[in-house]
Image 1 (cartoon, protein in one colour):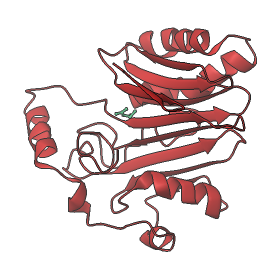
Image 2 (image 1 turned 60 degrees about the horizontal axis):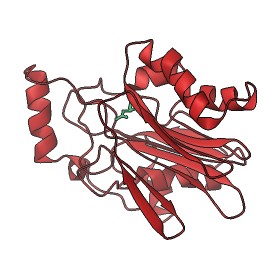
Image 3 (image 1 turned 90 degrees about the vertical axis):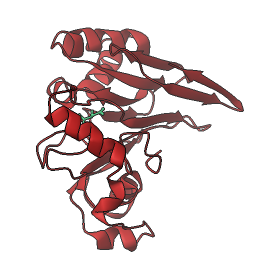
Length: 237
Ligand SMILES: NC(=O)C[C@H](N)C(=O)O
């Protein structure tokens, strides 16, 4: 998905106010391990580098990581212009001219439960269009845009990153399940009501629980998702 310019992640990601791309990504496995990267300008697939941070460094979050870390793990490095598409440039022009509202959606995320009962979540984004240079949203922040815990749930969020950060949304959903004994759907709806809708913000989340129950929820107009269970694939909007 990071290679497909239709999504707001990797190539074709949302542009900052100065017309560049700064990619963020994070991954967490249900054993509690996590890795994340922010403000990547040359890493072709930021989500792969987030996994490298998780598995091959003593750290969780790297800002604008060295390209050497990527190349030493076989991850492609590209020129910053690789990410910038004419469609996004035209979109930024219209936003700067106040002909349309800034794009705040389009992030990509995935959640999974494997056959051993382990959960995982991953999120990748270019952020929001016309964002300040250096702005970081919820997507690379563990507990805000991404969270996974075996026995409970895995979650990946999209939407107004500031609200997801202030509401610690992914961890709040998990906490309602772990400590409030809500099921995944109840927890997501309670968190969305209190932390997203109440702030006047919009967004969505995909989640899966330890039994493989999948929940897609959003208070934005639309959100696309697909679910694969064995060989069966369902597409939701
Ligand atoms: N498109 C998005 O979902 C934006 C992302 N949540 C951010 O604020 O960076």
